[in-house]
Image (tube, rainbow, N blue to C red; front, top):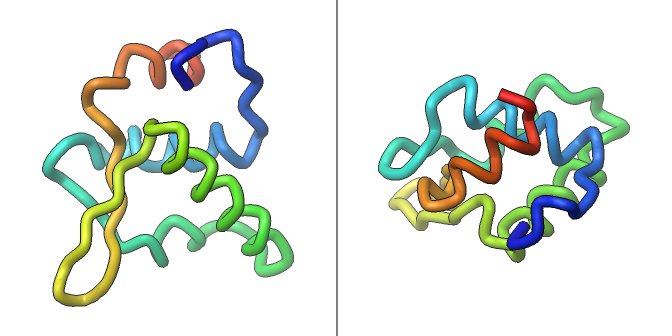
Length: 87
């Protein structure tokens, strides 16, 4: 994600859009399981892989809570995420 020329898959864009549209940026976070909701069951594996890639690249941050792992967008990458989503 450091280079905005990187190609994001449709699934990665959908994940970023979902988090962005719900305002999960910075301190506001959601359980990782909620990211998979809204995708067809046969795509859940691809969604997990895309989510792991976005975490590895630093676009999404993980936050460990008492009920499990939550995710949120990295607020330092908001400008890049907006460019990817054409916002």
